Structures are given as C-alpha cells and as structure tokens.
Amino acid sequence: MENTRKKFLKQLFISATAVPVLIEACKKSSTDTDVTQSGGCTVSPEETDGPYPLYTSRGSSIRRLDITDGKTGIPLHITINVLNTNDSCKPLANARVDIWHCDKDGYYSGYSNRGYLGNQDNTALVFCRGIQYSDTAGQVKFTSIYPGWYEGRVTHIHAQVYLDSKLKCTTQIAFPDDINTAVYKTTLYVAHGQNTSMPKNTSDMIFADSLSNELATVTATETGDYNLVHNIYVAG
Image (cartoon, rainbow, N blue to C red; front, side, top):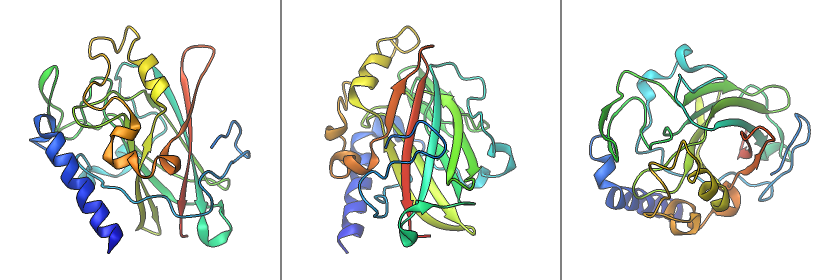
C-alpha cells in the first residue's frame, strides 16, 4: 500500500511541476566482469514510466547499440548491469532492457514537445531510445548523448527490465549533480544552461527518497566523453 501511495504521489508531482513541458505527453564497474553491488541485494526502486514512454514503437527499430539517431551532444557510453536478487545478485542473462531519455535540449522522441526552443513535433522519431538483451555477464551497453533536462525534473534516464516478456522493473537513473553542472556549462549545452527548476537530485521527488539506489557512476574520459555504469536489481 505504501509503495502504491509513493508512486501516486510521485506521478502527481511530475504532473504538477512539469505542466509547461508535459501538456502534450506528460556502482562502479570499469570492465565487463567487475560489478559492484550498490545498495545491497534488494530490488531497484520502482518509479513512474511517464511522461514519455513509447510502448507502441518498441521493436526491432530500437534494438540497437547506438541510440543517438544523429542527435548532437556529449557522447555518453552506458553500461547497465542486471542483477538477480533471487540468486544472490548474480548477473542475469537474457533480460530485455529498455531505456529512453531526452535529447540535450530536453525533448523526447515519439511525442510533440513544448520546451525552451518552442514546440517540436517528434512523434515520428525514436532518438535516445533503445533495447538490448543482457549478455552472460548480465550487461547491456548503449551509446547515446548526455541528456538535457526539462522543467520540473532533474537529469535522468528511464529504464525497464523484462524477463520472458514480463515487466519486472520500471526505474530511473540519476546523474551526479557536479557532472550535470559541468556538462551544462559546455558549448553544446550552454544555450539551455543550468537546470534552475530542479538544481539537485535531492530536490527531485523521484530521487529524493531513493537516490542511493538510483545514482549512476559517471566518469569523464580523456576525450571528453562520459561513461555511465549502473546496476539494476530485479527478482529474476
């Protein structure tokens, strides 16, 4: 009952704080085998899938490694480890992982968005969306761009995990505050600038009570790209 209430309050918060944008819609691992279990062996927090899921367009077209679709931004290399809480948090193979996030300007594919650049009709597009199946090490990888932000939310990635076509987890992934600040000062992101509507993860109702389990490890590379590593725990 408490989890249901929590999810309801979070969805209400999103609708209330992000109306200008949503009116049309809404830990450490450096190698394939080095997986650190963050937050203990418990199922990852359940979060809302809104406001921009795209269930009608999830198929072979987005089963891919590179999900940028030509969008500009700082390259982001994503590694997600799927771990089985029913098996001492060992890696879980053949789990389907769906992710989606906004572009550098805060717009989502699959929807008509209203943002700081005005209205954009992205209904026919699938940028920044992808599906992969975990390998024997429980890993999936995506190449994307560092997400921007939209009014009422801090920077995040949506993720869902399916086993045998059954949805096991809907969660979100947060980025370190200091890295968000640094990225949004760069040439590619400075037009939108810093997120004054939600400056920190602890200000965001989605992450405020579960940040320790949803905060990714994000590190800069020598070339200026970023690597993101995150564990998602499911009861397999």
